[in-house]
Amino acid sequence: MYVRSIYATGDPAELDGVAEALRTEGRELLSAQPGFRGMGLFVDRELGKLLVGSWWDDEASRQASNELLGKRRDELLAPFARTVTVDNWEAAVARRAQDLGPGGGFRLVRMNVEPADIDLLVNTFRDTSLPKVQQIPGLDGISLLVDRDRGRAAVGALYGDRNALVASRGAVAAVRGEATTKARATTTSLEEFDVVLATAVPHA
Image (cartoon, rainbow, N blue to C red; front, side, top):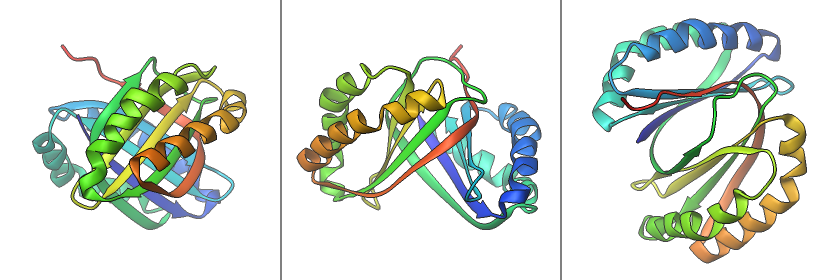
C-alpha cells in the first residue's frame, strides 16, 4: 500500500474545528475515491500540530486523489494551518488490529537512512523489531513507511489509550535503539499525538 501524509502546524485555538472538519467532510471525500484504504487523524492540541495519513491501494490512486481533492483539502486546513508539508510514502510494513477513536495515542518516529540501506531497515523492522513491540501492552497497530528515493522512513504506532502510550516509552526506546544501530538509520524526530480517528477499509 501507499500513504500520503499531511503535517500542519498553526494556532492551537483553531485546531479542534479543523480536525472536526477533516474527520467528517475530509473522511467522506476520501472514502469516495477509488483505491482508498483508510485514514488516520492525529493532533497535538498543546503545541498546535495536526497529522493526517491516508492509505491507498496503489500510487495511481494516491496521485489521482491528490489532484482531485488537493484544493478542497487546502480550504479545510486554512483556518488553522500556517505551515503544511505533504509527503508520499510506501507502506513497507503495516499491522493494524482495530479502528481507534478519541482516547487513543499515536507515536511518530522519523528517520534518515541511506537509500541503499532501506531494505536493511525494512528487514530489521519486520524480523527483529516487530515481534518485540507487538508484545508491548496496549499496542493496537504499527507501520513502517519508507521513501526510497529520498532516504527517509517513518514509524507510526497506535495505542488504545494515552496511558498505554506513556507506559510503552522505555521498552520502545530500547527496541528503537537496537534497530537503528543495526539498520544504520538516524532518528531525526520523535513526536506523540492524540488520536482523533484511525480507521482502515477492508479489502473486498
